[in-house]
Length: 212
Image 1 (cartoon, one colour):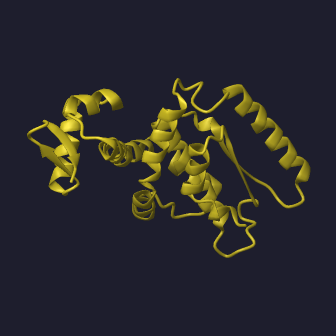
Image 2 (tube, rainbow, N blue to C red):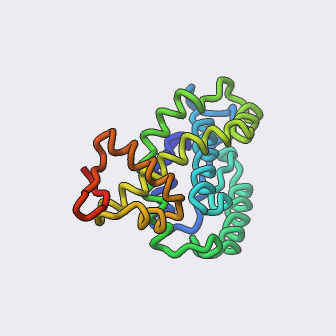
Image 3 (tube, rainbow, N blue to C red):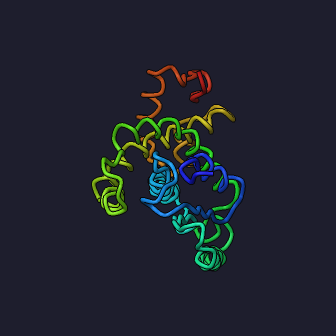
């Protein structure tokens, strides 16, 4: 299978299912067997997934992508051995990051709900015009892209997490803020926007927000 077929959903789902690390192996860049050069898509997805992991409080070092030829069996063994040692040093998913399993899954599942949105953003605002490793590195590691990603992903992630909480039970603003570690004013802003879009409603009797 082409490494470009390894979607963001696959990566986050693996972590959500409890995997401590994810390794992706692809053919060498600029040596793709297909005209699509899907290994560059794998490289872009790796950068995006690492930003997502960092944003939700997980170590990006739990994900690695390496490119090699079919004849590089020894190299593959070296890469996977080194990655296994790295993941073992990090320990179980969430432990180093100070989260329990329930918190980890909650954050990952909230992020997974945003993947369709991220695909659209990637096409419009996170597309690298030139397929070279240098161009991808400069683009995805630039401070401008980091700021752009945090801006477009941060609010959406908070709303996704709020929707998941409200799917379990109606909650007041203060409780939502406490559970998610958000500023109450930020929660109120998200609730007002979500209310305008018909996603939530405020129940005056219970003084709680609930899904519409």
